Length: 315
Image (cartoon, helix red, strand yellow):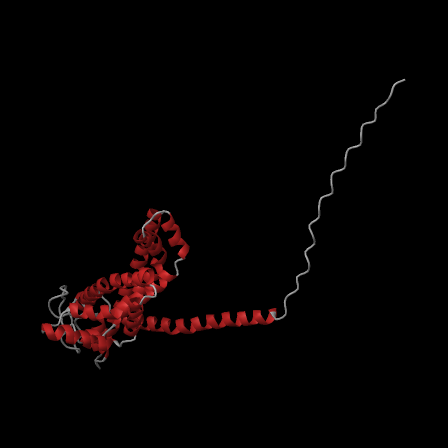
């Protein structure tokens, strides 16, 4: 008699565990009120931005409209007119003087200001000397530009008995220095401390850490502060009235001879009742805006290149 073997029935798979049903999330009390406040704050911020931008746009457009009437190659290269009534003359010497004086002030103020910011944030800390430097830089930030011009006038011009571009550059550098110091320190504070600790843990010296890790991360903010200081210096008139004298021809020597600048020409021609002089004032103002814009664009490009190369070398 043959015995039939019945195969065992397959074991059913274990049931798939179900994800616990998430409890219904109810909005907390006051959520609608907070959303309303957040939206209101955002709207006020946008409105404030628009209210600030609108006058700026109108001013730039008005200066461009009036300045383009006087802008020409002859206007940009000719010597300054001897008489405000003259329809001839240009701003060539003022362009040269602005570039020379502002560049000299930048070379004096920006490196010293960045080094000062590095000292205050990386080395000085809360020491008494660092606190004194911060206090003095805050005071210098609020000093009127005409006071700085009188200070350099008594210190340099009266002692040397000469007007020159260096005295003007020194006055502008004194105005730029506290801005660069404070901006550099604040930007360096924003760099995470973990980046410094990681670089030091890998055996880098503190100076190399600052150069290859800290400065590349803070460079955009430092450059913004430096450009703000340069733009302010390029538009200052009062310090230059006491320090550079007057010139009608281009003077590329920073240390010898009187000089002139676009801001001085704008001040002198804008106060004149004659139409040709007022047109030259608008042309000089538009030229100054273009110079500051070009300098800003070039500085931004150089900053991006420096940041990428330094970060790559540090890595």
